[in-house]
Image (cartoon, rainbow, N blue to C red; front, top):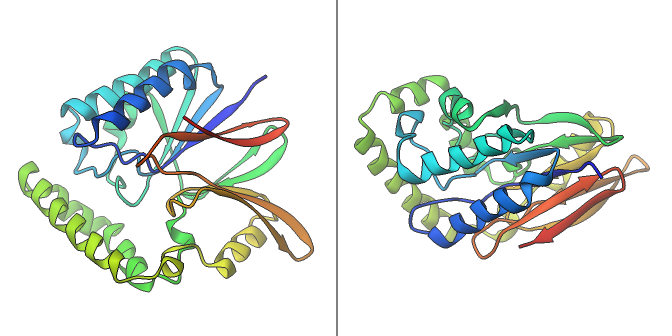
Length: 240
């Protein structure tokens, strides 16, 4: 049966080679049998620019994804909060289509909205301010104009700051806002919603204006891999 796969929050990095190997096995043995693979952000722990594409892990990931394209599997990539600087050079090398956040599609007969998920976390005001700054074209241009090593050092500093900030926040603050989720479901005419970012994998059913809407939260790959498989009969979460 034709089916599509959804993943997010892999946070691939040189210091976590075991998860990279899980990813390469997933691509070769599971994703290769799908009609499409959707990567909903944070494929990498960080991305400092497409001019770092020759870094070994980055090149290997792009090559693996390009192999899916060569086998007829459509690959789509949505930016996350860690890899929003991925550009057309990476997409072309990986034979992947860049898709917007949010993206709507008819998924085997079910209207579906895809998001990374961070824009749903509106209770985290500090993060939303940082996100607005980081997505500003001028901020990105200024950052990308710096030498690679300077960018790498700056990202390391930001990761430390982010880790410290998370320790001071409650889990509820960093999760989605229920009101924002309901507003999103209402805005898109009560679809199925698939997203990542929160690292709280689950299937939720929201009742909005008397309509039931399914929301799938994708799992992160810090401990083990996993994906969502969807076909005409519905969706199911699978752990690797």
